[in-house]
Length: 173
Length: 150
Image (cartoon, rainbow over all chains, first blue to last red; front, side):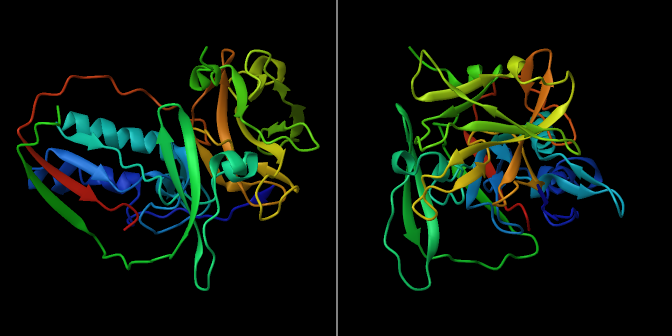
């Protein structure tokens, strides 16, 4: 086995950082008066400091967003429990939690090894492109398809909050 | 008859729809700081597409956190036929500080407790359940779309 060498830090948008916006004196999300919260895809990805796309493990919370450093030596690895705490905080505050699952940009999913032909297909290759994978689910099971697409990296603002005001959202119950 | 993969996953390590190569897929499992071992998966007699091994047959110790991969022959065109250790495609948690012996895939993580495979974080924190609650009907929904990893 190899040590991945990933180190924890806080203040860059971990699940615990999100919690700090929901509770206590800095509960800014609550003060804004929102009643629903949608995080960008919180599932596990190879990427660090990205938007959460390029999911590798759809059923696991993002490892890096649960990684926080307590001191020089020890890190806390708590992605699953931290994400669940975010959801529980939302419920305590009367805020609905929306899960964002983006299957169109999966990357390095283990199924590419397990059974490529069943779950993936190959798109076109060209200069300047890297692999991305589109995954679609149907009622009968899971169908993954592989496409080749341009990788677009958008610079992140220090803190980006987008508010949507949806009127007459009768479909949300 | 349904496989009910996620119910079965409570008692078995399961791998669905393996593209068979020359070798039988196996579970590569162990505790951190100790030796890992390979345990062959078996094809389910009920579901030919399902490979599995019961947790009870793996010699796991009560209350311990295990890291594991599935060792398979890769069906990926980019490296077809090579032996790889892949993360459980339906892992509930992964540890990216622990990578597989050859390829850099993160470890899948699970806790063994009272004969069951329980979702947990790498340091053993068990994921609780959020109680189902009927939310009131909202005519006005104000959503905050929050970027994480800012």
